[in-house]
Image 1 (cartoon, protein in one colour):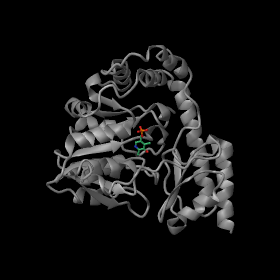
Image 2: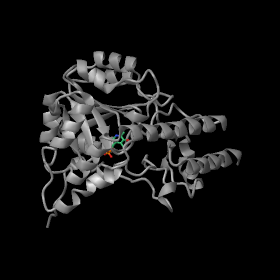
Image 3: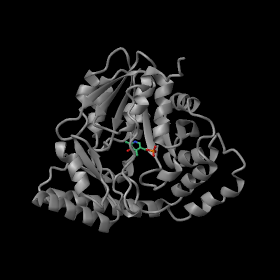
Image 4: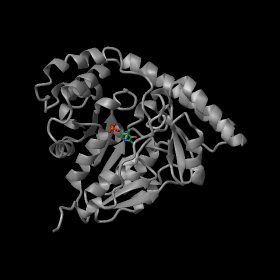
Length: 351
Ligand SMILES: *Cc1c(COP(=O)(O)O)cnc(C)c1O
């Protein structure tokens, strides 16, 4: 008897490893979550949807696309939303790639990339980060072949932290054929303070082969409700929407996302507080002698190499995110927990 078997494309797909949970959620600095709860008014507006969960959600996501349209000054057909920008990426890659195609991304980068890319059956080309943990866009452009369909650019890069600059992205896009789709993943864009950062929306205005990914999971603090979106030329956005399962974003999540967009002032305050904590953590770690790369997201990276796992264990009860043989990512949490982590990092160096 033979049993059913999944496509061979799945053979090498790693099982997604969630951030280690902590004794209490405040000590969880392993998943780049927002330490603040939902923005003012968000719970109330989401709750109005609870009484009608016998109904399917608005598959056209009209209110959400209208709100995004107003925010960005682009018509609603420029957007494609789904259950987090990871789900948008799955749909986008499925819409563009199959066996025999190639997908290029930097490594190390976001752990969801290998999963989303491998699922399509395409071949993946990983281009190593430079020594300072930045994207090597020159090498990525040089890796393009006739089979390349999509290139993923993560700025700031998760888990290492640095941005891609505007000048670097322009040069890169000039070098990449316009038939290749370039995905600029800006999951942490709200936390960026580097003045020379690339703006995905600026390059999107001039080029047809750019897709910008955004999410409500990080700065907006809605990770649990799962809403992310692509911004792209209407034809590209339409292909992503076609490849997305219908009714995926609940009305509860859509209402929460729209309400969050209405809370811009409070969002700005919270993001600025997190940025200030990040700057302080970065400076404190540098002062301890750590080689911390540029940190423009809501996290910092310690390139611990073979000590990554041991360091993470030594951080208990603070939960951090180790990548074996490479480094450890620490999310910016509440100030007192960040201070606890800084003390643990100092103790490690002193041992
Ligand atoms: C967190 C993150 C996302 C967004 O994830 P969601 O699916 O929207 O929760 C996308 N890209 C990167 C690089 C991330 O770190």
